[in-house]
Length: 223
Image (cartoon, rainbow, N blue to C red; front, side):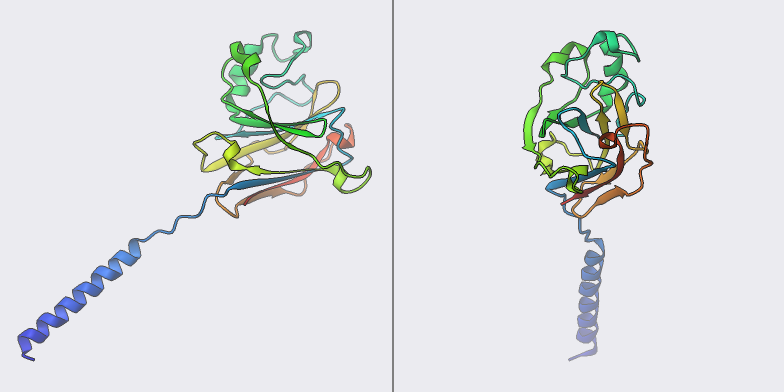
C-alpha cells in the first residue's frame, strides 16, 4: 500500500472512531417513570376509620392547609358553616387551601376514595365527587398492623400530566371534625421515577390527642 493510501485509511478510521466516541458521550439514559405508589403511615395507637377521617393530599407543589385543631372539610364534603373558624366563606378555603391540592385520597369506614382536582371554585363544591379506590384490610385490634394505614395504587389514578415530583401530606381529622395531626414538614415530596422514596421515622408525637390520630412515622415509595 502506498504512503498516500495508508494515510487516507488512517484518517478515515480515526474520523469514524471520533464520530462513534462523540455519539456515545451524548447518549442519556432516562429513568423509568413508576407505575404505582406505595404509602405506609404509622400512628401511636389503633386507627379508627369509623370515628375519624384520614386524608392523603397531593400536589405539583406543596399543598397548603389550615392550622391544627381548626374545623376541617375537603372539596365535595358536607360541612357545618357554623363551625367554620378560619373564615365563614367556603370560597376562602378554596382560594387559600384547596386550590393548592391536585388530588386527595380519603379513608373512612375502611374504604379508600380518590378525589381528583383541580379544586378551584367554591361554586363547584358539590360537583367534586370521589370514586372508589380500594378497601382497607381490617387488622386485629391492638396489633402493629392496627396502627398503620397502608395503600398501594396505580399512578394512573392521577390525571395527566403526572408531575416529575409529587408533593404530599397526610392528615387526621377527629370525630369532632377538627384537624388533629399532619406531617411536621410542609414540603414532603418524591420523584415519580421507579425506586424513588421518601420517609420520616420520627414525626413528633402529640400526647394531647388520641393515639389513633397521632402520626409518628411514614414512608412513600414509587414502584
